Length: 408
Image (cartoon, rainbow, N blue to C red):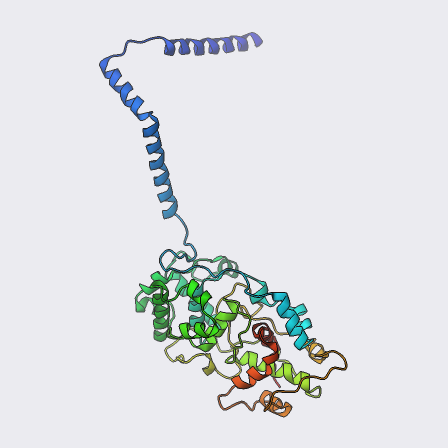
């Protein structure tokens, strides 16, 4: 057997050597063969080879692009970019300032993250504002359903009824130019009312033609931002406030039109000035408890101040979710009573008086159900006066007020 294997190896070597010798032997080329050799030489030239490589690469890239899954928004066709995941202020300094004004803030910061300012993510302004418009005046569950149908208009490959895992994995959102070119009836088919379809188109058109852009939004101060965005149909002051807090992460925004923040402030300040007041926290988290339904044309066209009583507003866009409502902090457990009872100033130091015109009895009556003429818990002037010591970081303090909503 060994001899046989050796013979086989020798035979193979001999065959290889014979083939090599045959290939290296000079052969007289015929005219036809010379032409073939010339074409081969031309195809093997460096210039020709480089051109071929570029063509293959270009073709391969075209195939890759055509097979790409839908991507997140870019600034190619709408002159806009993602908002940077950075803060324009010192977060630790902001916390120290609020704790100095009211020591109880220290426990709030310990109990939960201040999500908009600690969970920094890239946000697209067109997406954030679109989702905010879609969610106006309807339960957040319904808003989420309509938003998904809206996205599927531009990517039908997405599951019709996604699981929570599938929903969390969706990053695609249509570009402003795409939406601006979409006909009205198609937008209605996603569950949008006539008016919201118009609002979305107006917003998309402004981003597509450059009247709105990330750069312009970032450069605008708070007042300029309000003026710029309220020109868009369907966007009012509340929407601008939510966008400023949750997307632009501005530090000194006071959402005077939010009922949840108003109720939280009543609890916060009453517990500071009246230890005798007994708070019974609502077992429900803040949110719209209306039946989950799709939109209809009876939806109010006004901004969020026209919401049903006791309904808090939902932030326009964030991936940080709580158990029930995306973006908002969870309601505190009963241990909040201990937090509220903690000293708000250093021992022996007097508590600053309530603003002129605001009394403990007034705050108690508001929390008991005697609201203002506009059916709010506090007027904008009262909220501004109460939170004046929080400046220039009222956004952070307001965020935690959502957790303090209570019922008598």
